[in-house]
Length: 329
Image (cartoon, rainbow, N blue to C red; front, side, top):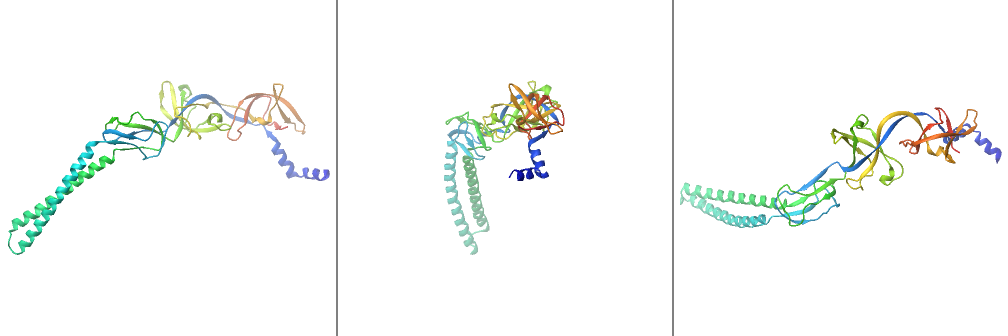
């Protein structure tokens, strides 16, 4: 059995695989210094839900914090005058229908008598005109009723976009005018809004990568995002920028989160943290010499430097050189 194991270990392919799995070659990395700033969770769009007619709020179906869908009815504005106007128009329409029916009967009688020469051409034209006027009056009143009915339907207050209700400043019974805001809705497309001192404008650009501690998002490891927009203005000595990072949907709008942004560039060494062994307060790594001997050497540990390709990366300030081969023990 021992002979068979030695033969397997002696295979070139197996030895190369084992060496690649256990060793790490130190290389100089182009690092970006980071600066910690605070950002707030904001919605790209904060839209008010407005009334389309004036009146009194008869119902409200949402409150702060509720989730709504685009077009969802969140309240109703009632205007009693619209109901009374519709009733008046209904009565007027019924009267015009009777007038039109009588005018059509008179026109038919005049047409029958005109064939026998009993009525003049003028009387026939008058009967036709009366029928047309009655029909036009009926259509006009029906159009007015449709307009009033549409105004009544516009009393429904609809959510302008899907998202979370931030504020409902009015209550049932409040008197509103057309265009008054009944609720404020934040769209679900949340971003991190950064406020960075203006001296950092040279480093903060659209497309730059920013980092957030995963614990702030309730996940393990660092999370990375991208700066999508740098606003072309200085606000109270700060540059305002937006960054996209996944996992912000359950946060409160306005909540503060620590974000690491680029603040310069330099060269250094970054190695995986599992290659570092701490003994009696000192940090060591195991370096393989060209002759195959492995020796523990002390290093000076820097700060954590996770990257998308090395989530457990740690910067080493001294003790290593480019080309050193480190092995895990």
